[in-house]
Image 1 (cartoon, rainbow, N blue to C red):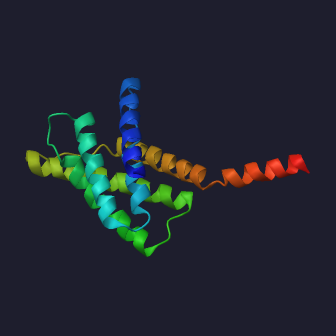
Image 2: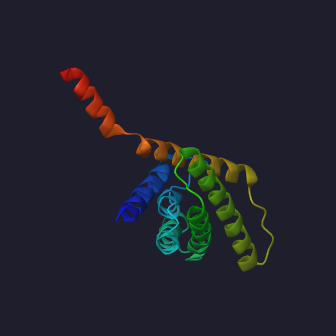
Image 3: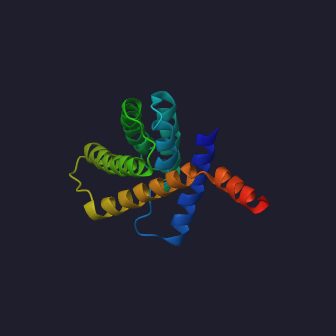
Length: 164
């Protein structure tokens, strides 16, 4: 349920970034994928990645190679879930680094797939990929920090201080 909400918000955010014409927008579809994969659950992570990849194919490159981003996102989601099963991924910095690496691997896999399918060598735009990965990793770290912050406990403590 939360993954579906995350995918819907990622699609809206991607459309918004498209309207704003940002040169290197973050890959918002990796945020719900990483949220599911960090718990080490590979099948739900891969299903979320499959839906995210199809949504990205529909929004970013309509009419061209359906399933290209799904394949790369499912592959990277499996790797993220394998890491999540073997390590505790709770800290915002660690999640940001994992998402940064996931976006880099995803970009390289998509470039390799396009190279294989088109039959001509493609060179990845490393600067654009680095900026996209950095933005996505930073956004994932900030969102994880906001989600981990004890908002209810802080509000209850302020309320107790006012009453005392």
